[in-house]
Length: 309
Ligand SMILES: [Zn+2]
Image (cartoon, rainbow, N blue to C red; front, top):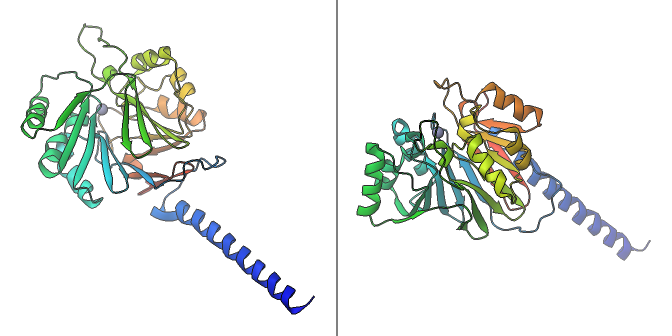
């Protein structure tokens, strides 16, 4: 072997080993940052290698608050409870929020709408979307008043609509399909929750608000794609949600549950946890894991826990 060939081989080996080192450190970084366990949808091919989408399930006690971020822009799905509103505002500041392009209120219960007053006071909100169900509460009335006073764009979402959250990130509204009443004939807030499937490249996540098995059935009856990599488990993991048929249709690999430590409702219920475990779904919950952060480039995804307890 002459000198030229030897040099060529040496350079090839060096380039190969550098490439391998870079690949391994990228995987390792994603899996270990944040000190928590991670999950990945390995095996998928990258088709939409874009900028990173981050979905944070905020640790704000019993309630739901999801902060989505891409390219420095923000969207929220639900805003947490009234008693935790300062916590929600300080978490949004921590993550660099100044303006929120879209806020979706899945339904007007306090543990989803409650943070809205603090959010509208402290941040610029461009547009608000809800299910159009009026609640007879002070916080709901104030919410509508603030939207009007601040001239925020307001829209009632219906099944079949599509929202563009960010460049390449779509939110397809699946519910409410129709108004569902409870046994007394009153509008059933949980079962009129906005349910939607988020997609980014090959990644998908089902958001359910507090939808229970009745609304899940109306969505199943509509047909269409429900299969998602990640499920935001309905109604804080209550036994009244995540029916076997809905879980089977979504077939998630990971489930996110937002619930307060030692909450009065016993959420998440054991039956739901058992169902998810039996289906080999990895469970992440705010009461034990703090804020849970999912990141995806549209091909694979990682989920990080803030703590393990
Ligand atoms: Zn709730």
